[in-house]
Amino acid sequence: MPACACPKHTYTKVICMLRRLMRRWPLWSVAGAILLGIMLWGGFNWTLTITNTEAFCISCHEMRSNVYLDYQSSVHYSNRSGVGASCPDCHVPRDWWPMTLRKIKATNELFFAAMGSINTREKFLAKRWFLAQKVWDTMAETDSRECRNCHIDRSMDLASQSEAARDRHVLAAKDGKTCIDCHKGIAHQLPEDFLDAEHERIEEQGIPCGNCHQDMWQPPVEAEARE
Image (cartoon, rainbow, N blue to C red):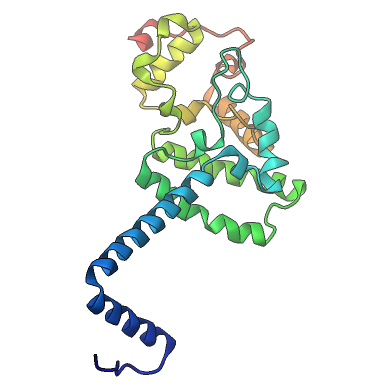
């Protein structure tokens, strides 16, 4: 077999070696390529699985010392039925392609982590509303996709809900609202800036206090709004 005439660079020498192997052992070369593909694909999916766990989410102190503490006191963490929702259940899509895109987008968080963007409690609180808005906007854009993995409209028994909850679910469906439009602060504390801005909006629009504060008296919804 004639010697390879490729330039004596590492990359081109490797290419020439692979060509010689493929000419001499074509079947073994194909089998090796298939095996390599399986290993790379398996490694990629293994990485997705590992990074899709609560343990991975709280492996950095920014999450463990801030939002995770909120989550531990929420109904998604502990409840009477024992059915919980962890970090990836709410923040990572289940379908493969949307999940992969989310992982790719999340790589920019490594940069901010290295820069110490929220490496102290004070920095985190200063940016909490901005970070919360990004999450809420993403959930609104997907029609609260991750919420609907567990909370399915057709399985929701409105008759078993309180009158206030039932009326507002009917109004939400009528107005084209999505879960996150109303259900903010379920697993994490609401930012102080958000609460201030929201109270101003509620006062301006004349929204009853009982819409948010369930322990307060709530005016009945008009009959035509329920239809």
